[in-house]
Image (cartoon, rainbow, N blue to C red):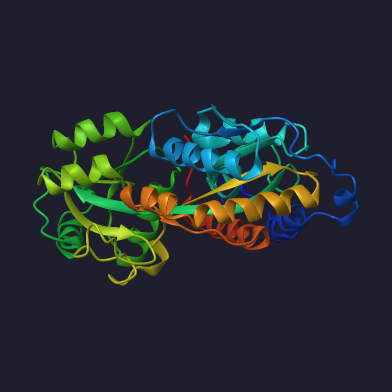
Length: 335
């Protein structure tokens, strides 16, 4: 990818914030068009990831609570692929009647569009509803690495430029963005090895096929760390994890620009009535405050968020602008 393509223009990124905020708030005229009986039929939540993972588990827990609160069934439909874009595209193309929602990280809105043609327009087709959680990103040393901590890793990278192999879930993934920020901030050269998914990456990590990997925190990963099969060197998160209190954040290590985590949320099609969006935001915030939901998130090392739709829209727009800058600077390409 050249520095100017296919990233959004500066003007387009500015429009993104305005468009997302307008979608989140929606015009008053749309509120007047809301059917008085909403919800009058089952609600569908499209999860942009496979069944059985942490994201799917969290979405199903929220769906159960939302069904009780709204008095209508809430069903989950998994549409995985293209780093979440397929699922979000299904939401973008659904009827804006409040009966189709999506659950995904913000990357289909804030990262993927800068790397190629998106099947939907993040500025015009999606209305952010509520931020649900952030998922910390762990940087792990495998049996192939002799690093005792993150500073050891950087020292080895300086001593042997390009010899340290760092794997991520794919080219232009969040892990790749973080690696580029680490290399720029620490002035080191590390070889990026992109995988097509987390399963093979973890198997190869345990087998010592490379030195470092970045991956979202979760019970399976923590199990390997506790067993001594992988060593946690650092975490991308606003604060240290309760499950790994001795592992510093990248901000603590002097690399705040690389201190990134995966933010997840609920979305609706643009033009969904404002009153429906407001009701969904209120009910989802109520569900996120329940001890049962918070405990489930804590157990998977995910941190509940919540808040207003406008706040969520601002977070998406800010990350989109930051990603565009990093992608241009590093010359990152999707393939």
